[in-house]
Image (tube, helix red, strand yellow):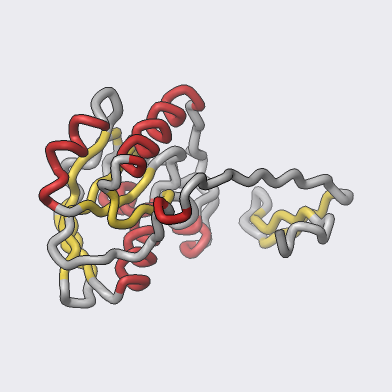
Length: 194
């Protein structure tokens, strides 16, 4: 795995007065893990494939912007960092694996650095499409649209499916929080409403 052998671990952030700082720790062992895909034909890529596909979010979004890319761009750090719930996330990943194995997913991407907005941009751009998104049904607890778009709450997945797979998809994702949040569009724009 390239890029994992430098033995450097640096943090760039801000001190209590808001001054930029860089902290380097001694060389650190990094352990990477890999998964095996039994059939490469079942691999799911991030690119949206078809205009009209439905866009779903799996998992909950909270106002967790502490240490986020969004706050970093604004010159802030924030005080509510994402909390990880391994048990809840495992349920999400198992449900995702079921829908992947059932062949229902057109595209999928983990929502991480940059939040939902960045995941949407990657998915749309990679496929040469756009998206029409509504934030009102996103599961979780947040106050502002910026939190819905840029929160880095852990365990979430953005995916697209063919509308004909909607009922099967819902059946295989029972027991986890998820929502249909929009559609893939031909026009290469991401439109977000609430």
